[in-house]
Length: 306
Ligand SMILES: [Zn+2]
Image 1 (cartoon, rainbow, N blue to C red):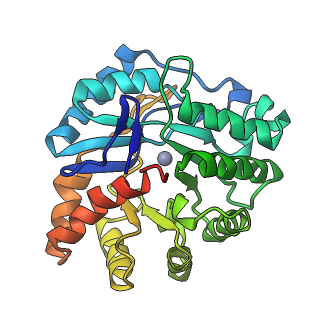
Image 2: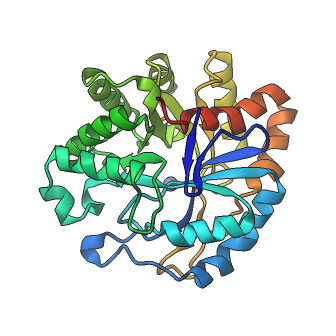
């Protein structure tokens, strides 16, 4: 198994932890409205390096930066900061929701988009940084034609490179539609991750994604919106249903948010390990399962299938 980091291909970590869904740098303003801005390395370092160092001290070995191109994508700077903290990094190719995509992507044919993603995964961007996975997003109200075109391109890129596809998909019905599209194109559901799966109220849909062979992610741990208890209960339901090998956990912390005052998330990357894991342990989730959820599972999902 090989994970494509910004420092080259590595074997999945054999100990420590993986943060499966975080952001070091993001700009949530659409490029059409002047978004896609980038802070300097020094600015990003000031707000995120101490937090990343605390995460490294808590045992984090690898961080998956889930910011796709055109929403504050800044792999060079993120690489500089995670490297300073001693954490390996995986960055994305792919595109966020329809309304955040640049005009060229709307005009581009499916094949050209697939080629663009394949190039990022195999040859890298101008700076030499290779992407290690494909990040997509679907509009809550339903998959748009543009998003379907981008998904089909991502499927082609995943088939040729073995890269995983992580999709921002808080509405479960959209996740099932993406799985249908992948099945029709002959791509194994094992390459699909439903990001923000905790936001879907109907637990049967969580199970349906898992039964079809996909992965789900509960990734807002430590936020004000959901209590730790909410996540502990959800995790137990997945473990009891026998799908503990297809669940990822993370926090979706945005280290540096362009144009926000203050330009950072108050939350800590280390919270998952300093606060949440002890609660999980007290609830009866054993060391083997904790290791699976926080190291082995993300290591497996983010490995290229070849
Ligand atoms: Zn996110």
